[in-house]
Image (tube, rainbow, N blue to C red):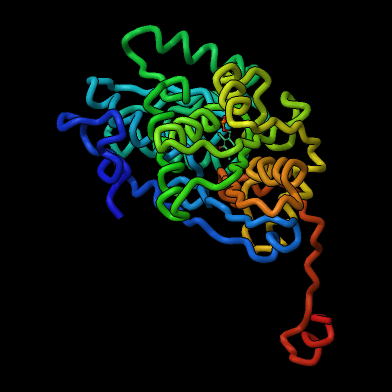
Length: 323
Ligand SMILES: *Cc1c(COP(=O)(O)O)cnc(C)c1O
C-alpha cells in the first residue's frame, strides 16, 4: 500500500518539495467483532492501530510531522511522551536522518516503549516530574530554532492522524454511527473529528478517559492536563457524543473482554474507548467503530492472573491437564 502522504496527498500538508518519510504507516485492519457485537448489542468494528510500524496510531502523524520538519531544515526533533510518541518519534527521526530527543516522566513508562526509542537511537531523558511538566519543557525548548516539537501540538501530527477517519469511511462506505476512542491529551479525538468533518459526516464521538488521570494504570493516557481539551471537548459536544470517566477496573475489564472475546490483545489504554462505548451505546444496535490505539505487547506489565501449569511431554498427562 502506498504511504499515507501519497494516498491522501491532496488532503495533507505536503507538496512536491516535502520529502517522503514513511515506514508503511496507516492502512491498518478494520476488524469486525461478531462475538462482541452479539454480546453488547452493537454492530462493532475495531480499527487496529497497533498494526502501525511502531505499534501505535502515533505513526500516522509522526510520518507527516517528521517529513515537514526535514523539509524545514530541522536537525533535531523533540517530544514529551508517555512512551508511544517517543517510540514513534525515534523511529521516524532515524528514518529521516534527524536526531530525536525524547522526554518521558521518570516513573511508570512501559519498558518496551523505552526500548523502542533507545534502540532507534533517540536521546532518552527521564524527567523528574510528570508528563505534563515534560510537555511544558518540550514546548519551551521548541521555542528556539534548534528543536522542532513533534507532540500533537504540532498541527502536522493531527493532519496525519486524521487519515484514519478517511480509511474507515473508505472501508465501511460511510462513517459509522459512533466512534469510540481513549481520551488522553485529546489530539487523536481532534484528528478523527477533523477527518470526519472534512468528509462531511461526523459520527457521535465517545471518548473514554481515566477518572483519576494522574495515576491511572493506563499509562498512555496518564495525562493530568489534556493539551487539546478545549478543541476535543467542543468536537465531542458538537457530534452529540460524550466523555466517559472510567475506573482502572472498568478499563481492565474491557481490555480482558476484548482479548478473550475477539483475540485482540491491545494496550490497556486502548480499552478505555471500548469501556466507554459499552456504557454509552451498549444495546443500541448502532454501528460503532472502536479505535484500538496501541499494540498489547507495548504494555505487558499487567498481571494477567494466569499461572502456567507445567506438564510432562506425555499426551495422557496433557489431555488431563487441558481439561
Ligand atoms: C497517545 C495514546 C493515547 C491518547 O491519545 P491522545 O491523542 O493523547 O488523546 C491513547 N492510547 C494510546 C495507546 C496512545 O499511545
